[in-house]
Amino acid sequence: LDDRMWVDKYEPSSEEELAVHERKVDDVRQWLNEAFHGGPSGKLHKYRRILVLTGPAGTGKTATLRVLSREMNFDITEWRNAPADDFIDQGHNWGDEGSSHDGASSYESAYAKFETFMARALSCQNVFASSSRRKIVLLEDLPNIIHAPTQAQFHATLQAFVTSTPSVYVPVVVIVSDAGLRGEAVDERLNRGAFGERDNVVDVRTIIPKSLLLGPYVQQVAFNPIAPTLMAKALQGLMSKQFARSSSLRPSKEFLDLVAETSSGDIRSAIMTLQFACVVDCPSASGRSRKKTKGSKSSTKVVLEAVTRREQTLALFHLVGKIMYNKRKGDPPSASAKVRDRRREQELDAGLVPSMPLPKILAHHERAPSRIDVDSLYADSPVDSSLLALYIHQNYPQFCNEMEHCENIIDWLSCIDSSGGEAWYQANPHRFHLLTLGTLHSLPSPVERRGQKIFKPEFFDIWTKEKDAHERVRDVRTWLVDQVGLIMAFIRTQLNVSQEKATPWSQTTVATQLGGILKAYDAKGYPGRPAPTTHRLFSRLLFTQNSSAQTQLAENDVEVQDVSMLDETVTGSGLTEQDEMNELTGGWLESDDIEDF
Image (tube, rainbow, N blue to C red; front, side, top):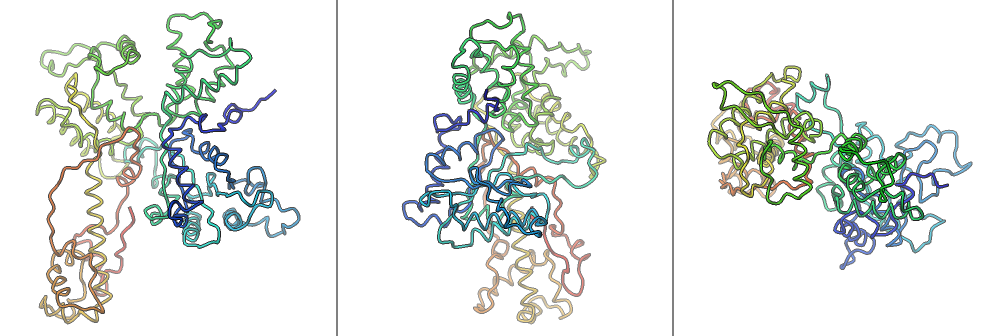
């Protein structure tokens, strides 16, 4: 009797059995080919050092890699955080070296073991494997990256790895599953009862240093949630294997579609749910299970949703769309709606409680019951109220018909921004609900379909430009302080100030007063000590015109980086004279570091 879990028992062995989009498989295959053979030029292998596979859990990242290992004939050396199994190479425990361990090795730190593993895996050949087989290093069960010293060591290890020039290049594949955590706005902290700093989240930005993530040695392939059609096909194939001898016990196609629908694109969750459901009396294809009663399908769906519910089940794209399209009871279905979707809307309308009648003085506020459950929306939201407000602010005009609609939404956005104080314990804990309910109440009903598209907030592009400009001002100011001996007389002459006052250049002074001087310095020409070319960003005043090139939000986009920007405090990033004068000591800014975003 094979009592293994079905996810292990029916692990895909070929690309046809994978429920992953073929384009993602091709992307990983192409990267591995270039890492092993160097591509058409034969020189790309030195740049194909680290491949990062990201995406939600259960989207086939590890399965894709193992299928390609069989297809492309390479071994996988995997690190695992286990006391007895330091690392495993397809069943061979490299950490077990018999009597070669001395007494001190048992006290070796966990990260020291990881460094030893990396050194051996990247330089040594497994004696049990064929010499002609390539190998990769798989990092999925990572060290404790949340621990700051361990994170710094891990980053240093990756930096040393990509800069090394071994005789045989061994690529490293890092698998990062999205944690599914929303942002950390003040109202979210209050609801969690948090008194300290925001919790550290393990994601691709904490695992891979920024210098590598934006460099040529790291490539990222993002896996999307499994599409329902691919999910249903994979589940059908699994059921054909499991119930090959007893087809009468095989669950019905409708039941499999229901499992695929409630799994939120997580095929691992779908398979485990299916195995759990087959233990009980689930609807079979032959119809021999319990007699169907009215509402049996809906009750089965409720049970499956309770079993498969994940912390994050709603994509950002669908979250914003649900709010902006403002569907209410009695709204006509869209022209592209499927029969199943129309039936679902009818069932939802039947369960909605009619709104209480309002007095005549408030008749203009009367609305049909909304199809959106705000509590469920909040529980499934991948973002916090601050980021959601940015998306609503970016997209609401195209969903409005009258200026009054826009005015009401802006009133709600302003009210929520001013609700509570600056500290987290002063914030209004109901901001998400107020924002959602206020937007739904302000939008027209039904919302006219005009081919609207959901765009990302331009806030982050402006924020990035501001950071870049400020960093260039800081670069110029640092150069001025370093070159004080050379240009002291020049600056004193141009500004007509005494020597005592010529030294303290604040960042505001650099940005607003030294532009002409820096241009003159360039024109004069000092080949040995040139000024940083970055000063031209603010000294030449190159005005640009907004091209309104907005970035459309894709269906599976997750604004992880954007969420972090909203909650980070930047020390010394402003250009106010008061802040700079408070830090002014000895003629220059003693503390002028800018925290990374």
